[in-house]
Length: 449
Image (cartoon, rainbow, N blue to C red; front, side, top):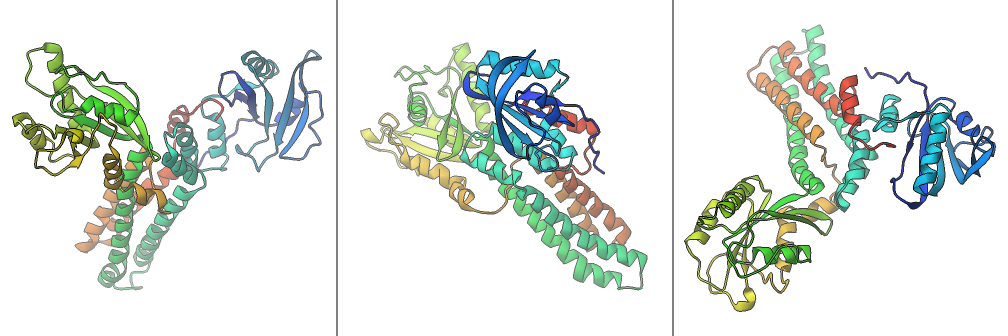
């Protein structure tokens, strides 16, 4: 059962960036907050309707401090479920902090990280998946990540989890009825004809959700992309072409890149976290040798490997070694220097990194990660790592129940694993969340959120 917030103190925080700007917003929430702000304001907020704006001045000791607009929101139809006020002041650093100071001097408390969202959750305005989506929206790195977060804020994840749990409840209800009224239906017939097909369908639904989650997670966090190849095949030129800047030093001297170089690009709304590795070759240079070792380690940790070969020169043993080393990875083979002509006979995408001719590569990346399908598909995608872990656990518990059904174990044993599955899915919405867990989770939010 969810714990309902009992604190009625007023919290305050700067909700906008702490930089000079045209406007800053100071947000307050709590019992009697409208009356509280009215005491430091020249106008009268007490008789105003909810969701209205009032013009006036913030004052201290009867002295005007700043010209402001004040938004008031009356419970229960507010973000936190409590009365809320937002003071829209001028965006100077001094004046913003001064108004915050006035609020604190008059008895408000500085909000903890994520406390506004935490109050919204505890007052049952949002569930935990929606609260986390607010944080995901703030940290979104690209268009797709922001859209996934927005849809979760609107309740798509909540509805998906409720739908899964509704299927579980139907299965559990059948079992509980049979336990209470054993004469109701033959247990073998019930298991074979009703419970097992429903459980298997639910298992397939969960599997599909997890498969979709892999791509969603990659797009949300960015695809860890490693550029690999022997020296002087054009790896650094490719990095610069993708970044559209001269971030890597490009020379004809073997061993110029001695360590990994990182950057990122937006590819039609998808983030690639790029790592240009040291050219792989035999070397006695200690520093360069460390760079080569890091290159091989980067391959094993990558979501995508871009293996670059020089198409204008015959392949050598080191090229074949890298082709073998990366064959089990999610790779794209790039035949570079097409401007000089291609004399090798392997399957790959021809590019000219030096001339910035890499459109074929961009198209292949989007195709490899089903980017187009994810962008237009209206299906709900799970991208939060905590949610994915809990769904994985739910899948394992459900599989135990299915295995038990297949060998006709007693239904009272089967139902234990089904209840475990149900409980793990409920944790996504925070329906069984403990206070220390909530403190840890909301502490990751921004102050003012």
